[in-house]
Structures are given as structure tokens and as C-alpha cells.
Length: 109
Length: 338
Image (cartoon, rainbow over all chains, first blue to last red; front, side, top):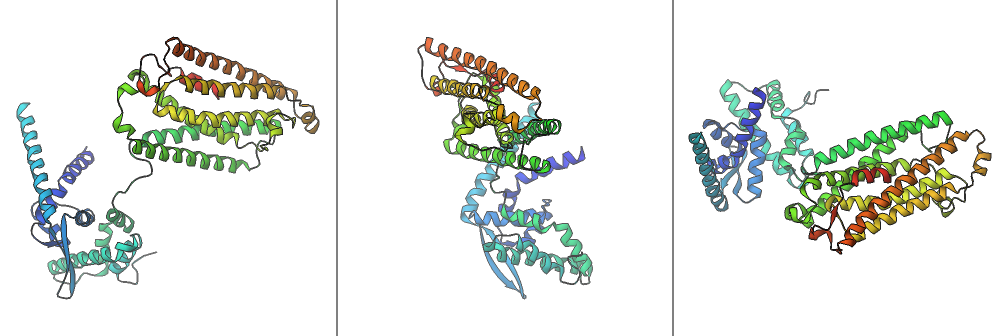
């Protein structure tokens, strides 16, 4: 059961990943710092999932990116774009609606 | 072999991930991956208060995952050859066809061993391998084409109970048609194992080999039946032209049976004196049984045709009118036709 439970929790978390990433990247971050920022708020995403997702969102035009050279180390910074902000508002509204729906169901039974 | 033995493990890892990525994005992704790893390693070193040794880096990379898997994540899921809607049917089609073909080949090999017949020009092992390759290839191709055609025509999206057979029959009939297509494809592959010429002489029995003549006629009718059943997967309601086409195909096979029965086997018996008489007798009985099955099938389809004619309706199947009949007897008909 614990394996199935873990799979269900993973699936549930996967559903809010984009929302979490777009929200966190309202402040400019690079891959590793984004992961740490998410970890701090208890959203633990595997790097192998997070980094490709960030690139995918960038390819959709939801994120802007730039390379930076700091102390001889290259870093790629990402930030939510204007289009990303618009999408984020829609997703947030959907998320709140879903949350409310679950609460309503819980209260009804 | 240890991949990381004498080199910088991180560089080797990045290089391997890059080798699985598309050329236009590999440098960029590799650079970013390296930056993220370096950042993480620096973080770990600062926490440990000492530089990370190679073993620790290797462990870190092992946790991150196999380069193939990492590269795959960057490339997204893409479009699979057989989509999720069709995959369960594809799996059943392949497995059942392989099962049927294995059984038939084993029977053929049994006959070959008993009568020492030349049933194929390939070794026994290759007989299996060739058959499996053909079957998997043909069924995969058929499913890929079907899926793309359905996608383009919007068949699944625009589907309505009004333009299909009655709901209690539609699923069964579509399944029957899928099964028939798979069975016919398998059958065609099996028939192709027979080592023979494809000439008019063989077709009309002038070569004196009734086995080859019969196989040739079977091949022709099988090729004609496959598209008919394939169409039936998407449209399970018969109209007059489809019924005429089907009856015509059955009549063609009937002609093939009669031609086979009329073949003069004297020359074959002279060439192969060891062939037992029982084999010819058994073969003739099989042909006669086939002819009975064909007559029954023609009768069934003729009845369907008269039902349409009586109601005076020859509308296209898409109209979904009550006078059109569905193919509820299709499974047994399909079985008889092959």
C-alpha cells in the first residue's frame, strides 16, 4: 500500500508542479537555487524532473532566461515572463477552485 | 567496467547525457546541467567543510539517474508510435496473432515431419522468426495508419451513437472486425510460407499441384477481405454495396475451391510417389468443407441484402437508419471465410 500511496502522492504533486515553478520564478532564480527555494516550502522535486520542466516552460514562452557569469561559474537564470504571469493567474484560479471543491465535498459527506 | 575510473566523473556524465540529446540543444543543456551540479557540489562541500572526493561525486551522479533517462526527460514524452487509446488493442492483436501463428506453424511442421513435404524454403527456426517479424510489422503498421487516419478525420471526437451500429452490438462488432483483421493478416503470413510461384498456371491449376492452386486463391481472397474488415472496424453497419462486395469475394473463393478440386494430380503423384493417398482425400474433404462454409456465408449475406432491399433502403451506413443492419453474425462469418 505504501508504494501505491507514494505513487498517488507523486501524481498529486506532479499536478501542481507548473504552478509552483511559475510562482517561485516570479523572483529570478537559477536551476539549483529554484530547487532549494521549493524545498524550503516543502515542495521536494527531483532535479531530473525540475530542470527539464523549467526548460520546457521556457520553450512555451512562460519563462525568460539569461546566462550569467558569477565568480567564474556560469549560471542560467529564469524568471516568469508576462505570458507566464497570465497563465499563472489562470492556474492559480483553477487551483483555488479545485481546493474549494474538495473542501465542499469533504463538508458534504 | 567502471565508467568513471580515470576521469572527472562529472565531465564523463555530462558528455554521456549530451550524446543522447538532439544536436541543436545538447551544448546548452550540458552547460546548464554542469552549472547546476557544480552549484550543488559547492553546496555539499561547504556543508562538509572539505572538498568532495570522486566517490561522493559518483554517488551523487548515480542518484541523479542514468544518462539515458536524464536525456529522455529533456526531450519530453513526444508522440508514441501507438497511442494510449489503441495500445491495449494493439497488444491483444499482436499477442493473439503470434499465438495463432505459432499454433499453425507447429501444425505445419507436424505435417511436414509426418509426410516429408516441402512446405517452405526456410529453415524451421527462420519460419518462426520470419512469421513473427511479418506479423508484428504488419499489425504495427496497420495500427499506426489507423490511428493517424482516425486522428485526421476526427473519428473519435465526432463519434455519435447515431452513426454507428446499435450500442449493444457496436463494441462486439468492432472487436470482431479487429480480430478478423488480425486473423487474416496472420493467415496471409502463414500462406506466404508456402514456397510457390504466383502465375496464372498455378492459379488455374495447370501445374497439377492442387495445394499451390488452393493457397493462391486463398491469398487473393484474404487480400480482398482484409480491407473490408478493416473498414468494418470504423463502420459496423453494412449497406448494399458492401454486401455485394462481400458476396463477390466469397464467390471468388468458391471458384478457387472448384478450380482446386478439378486439378489433375496425376503428374504430382508421379513426381512424389511417396505422397499418401490419404493426404489427397483429406485435402479434398477440407475443400468440400470450405465450400459448405462459403455457401452458408453467401446465404447469410444474401439474407442481409434482401432485408435491405425489402425495406427499399440503400442509404449510406453513416445515416444510421433502422433498416440498415449490423453485422452481429460477423464473428462466425469471419471464421467461416478463412
